[in-house]
Image (cartoon, rainbow, N blue to C red; front, side):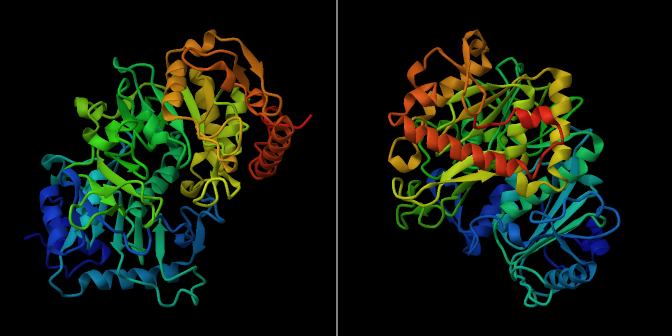
Length: 538
């Protein structure tokens, strides 16, 4: 039996926990999930759970304590809401009391690492009451050896009390009874009112987004892979729905990681030990690696399935469009981790910005100047269809600075400057790839660019053959468009030529340019060359 003092839990107020389970094997976590009726066994032995009323993160319920060590660094505002020490203390006591309460439930602790580079790795401790939440962090973070657990001391701790609610949130000036609160000085965070496991994953990402840039390391919301010789590393930036996870999971290139990475003087390294892939409309033909990773040990969230056969209907988004699966990195057979190596590489040789342009005016692929790369990094653009019925609703532009706005704890310019410095130092080219629509908007009923076509474009970038093409300049976005590309119908490469209604193209392109310009006013680097590299209406 583990006593709280064995793990130093008394230091954070956890003194009366009777049933502590630390770093259980996944088989035991699955057994407890089934025993407590919080999940079911599904396809090929994967566990299926529902995450309660929240099927995604609650960004309006995320707060940081304003305290002396971090207040001058944090980017206060809509992303990082300010909260007082007194409110934190009140809710912290409520969370601690929940754990110290005598009952017959288990307390699950996962101790592990965030960051594959030992020089920049941090020790993370996750404390939860639900077995499947412990299963989730077991999948997502870097799992330690028994030897590494002997003298383990956490650098940051998250206490998840998903069944604790803030009944006095209005008095506290908070958004709801749900809360995710970080105290950077105490190196601790508390979660209440939401079961969604992604809060723990992204919570540590926010912590690394704070710690690492202060050490000159760029924290990035991106995926990464290498060639079969471990060379030619590439990083893929993109918001949800742009194909970041899918396109970096490539049968011809081992995966480093699918979501979070750092770029230091040593090269790039994965923050995580797992993948958290969207499975809405999952197609085994086009996404075989993700599909095949759904097996014993994987954790499916909020999928719709037949109660008797347990067959999953991946096309059914009636619970949420944000259906997900988490699994350890070595479930991707073609990954660096599965090869028995650390999820690291040298400096990237290609940077790819992915966008799903539902307006249909950005080219399928274009080359960026360094200044344009900075502009698009700061913009972090994609677009989505506002509703579920294509052809009825209009596209909605989404801008997220550095392609990870909800997780930036410092001002976006801090990350942008780091990216610029590293691109210049290592002479890394950047490309913009549109995985959305071309030749018409999503509301026209036209089909989205196919995944096989986009994969061919990505391969032409990575093998360098795109550089042998002649390029022309886009009229509005001024990016360089290749005239030809092996394996691609040249007719679709230039959006203006792809549109049947040229007047509608002009109108739509100008509208999108204005959206970019209006958004960029929030993040102007003060560098005229970067501003001049953005889109314009002549």
